[in-house]
Amino acid sequence: MLIATAVLLAGCGSSPKDTISLANQKAPSSASSGTPGDAGSVSVKWSRTKPGCTGQCPTIDIDSVAFPGEPKLTELVDHVLAFMTGVDRQQNLPYDTIAGYVDYFWQTAQARDATSLRGKVRASSGNLIVVELGTTQTLTGAAHAIPATQFLNWDRARDRVVALDEVVIPERRAAFVEAMRAAHTRWKQTVDDAKRDPASFNRMWPFQETDNFALTSDGMVLKYDAYVIAPYAAGQPELTIPYTALQGILRPGWMPK
Image (tube, rainbow, N blue to C red; front, side):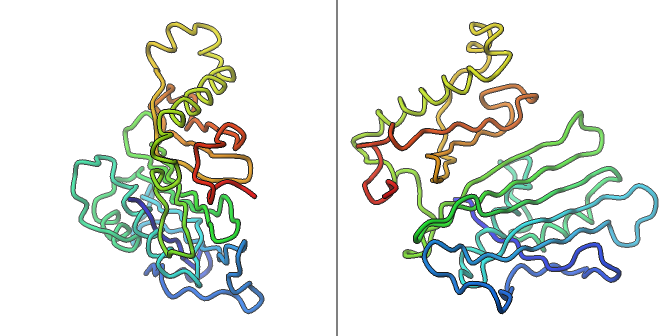
């Protein structure tokens, strides 16, 4: 289960901090104390070129959020963003925080390598905070960057992430998959390659289920990484299932009031 933080006060100022700390971030005095419906987040930005490097050098750029009132969520954001840098998910990573990744990156990166870590609050309502995390990695010699996105649906009442199986009524799982499939069909109507040659597109890029979801004000959003249901040029496809199509499928506590 992915999750993590992003708290990096610094940036490209005259004396940026070399050490990244994602914990112990404090909210500004004017910020909310985390009342229901307010995410209580603070912005964290940090950008750095490999210390001591001259000429073309590896870079890391971070633009994320931290939650001073939700330390577990912040730790989770930190961990998940670090985990998402693993291009080969079968490989055990020698780090589990962003700070650990930065140290590893400086030791192993080639001249044109670049990593971008992103985090933002996608939605917030009642006790639910939806965080969208993203990584983009450019590797020396690669044809293009490698992007990835992960949603975290954080329940403040239980102080943890909510899984898809907790949101969907178990007996209605098949109906949920059909609602997902219908959203996929609507999405294909916006894709030029799918409209131009539906048969070829469906053969090469068939429908797939995903558990990467976000409960937003517009509906349940489903996100796919590049190459999962479409070619790289299509980016990271995003499908939306309206709540009207999820009546009797989602547990009542997760339906908007």
